[in-house]
Image 1 (tube, one colour):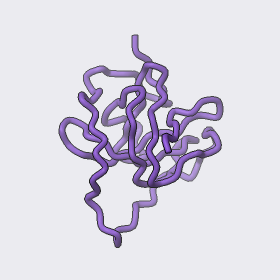
Image 2 (spheres, one colour):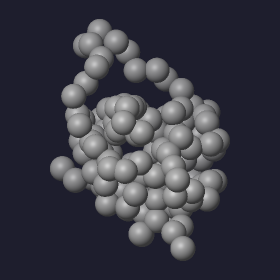
Image 3 (cartoon, one colour):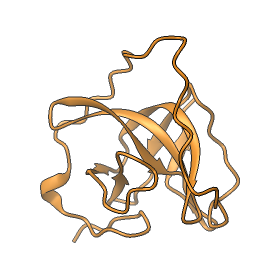
Length: 130
């Protein structure tokens, strides 16, 4: 069985996008400001090793990582598979103790920006690749 590494939702294999496309073409302009969202609580997060503009690899130990449309959402819109590489396009934002980063990935054929957790105090879910 596959295990989810994010804090709330079990894995549903029907929501795992296939294939994952991490195209980094942007659709925003230089004048747009990223939305500042979250509850401000990053207490359960590890020391951050991520910055906007870098790429990260999902470290889900063979499972998946929850991908949310908004860092305040409880329900993920998809589950991202282990070892997929994602460009970081925004963040951070905190939710329920977890530091979230905005990443870009194709889900169900649509290029989307969404949010993933960096990790817990004992484990990173995202590994910097550059």
